Image (cartoon, rainbow, N blue to C red; front, side, top):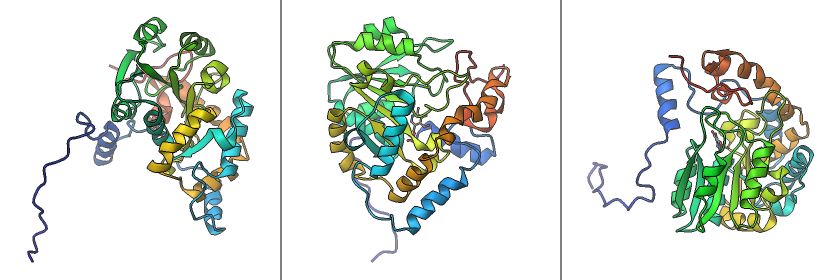
Length: 335
Ligand SMILES: Cc1ncc(COP(=O)(O)O)c(C=O)c1O
């Protein structure tokens, strides 16, 4: 037998994502590490998480929470999420049937699209957008229909959004607070969206991973606040962003029972379940609402002091890079 490990090449499969290469985050993070540069590319903080959350997960591991949890997630975590949403946004999702724990928001986004979008459908995306949206739509065999947010404040252009809707529109993707521009949708935007969608079967995917990073005392206009929108929506969030634990990759999807049932059909065959001890640790940590309620105040100083074109301490952390408020700071280098 030859010691040569080179294998004869096989004809590669036809790519499901022919136009996709390495993500920009991988490229920028590698470059930042190589050049010892500040990494503004990827959304993770340059400080560690609260040691109490690490203790909570360690405790869960030491007390035997190390086997598969229920497919939809650990009940006490789903209960804590349902309680949080009810308290903050006024809509009570059923923790049993309407909250599913995911391997980060990214898995939630892909699973929501795969479960509800079919080949030939159209999905409207507000651009610029988080980089997983377009490949997820492509994997579902659907067509992404871009609608560009209106500079300089990156507001939703409702006239162009309305014009982009066709009989094939299956879903609209929104993201508030928005990465990368930092804009937020306000209650009035949600009303306009509801007006557009009333009487249609169009679904909404609302990426709200930065829900606790809204500044200047403004409220987060969660889709779950709005009955006409909530009834047709997958609302997605991420513990990674809220608790500075992006590497743990745990998020959740809140959606009405019929949508959650379809979501779980796909979820059970792409991850089945998500890390048990982390879910228990998060459930314990959520008992104290202070860490998420105080997140805006924590980031506010870095969001408000700015060098020309930049929020000041933004240079230390991508999560702080955009000022998410009515007064605008668009992240860009001074010329
Ligand atoms: C808008 C947006 N959605 C989703 C994600 C992914 O979140 P997670 O790490 O929980 O998959 C990110 C991460 O940067 C993001 O910026």
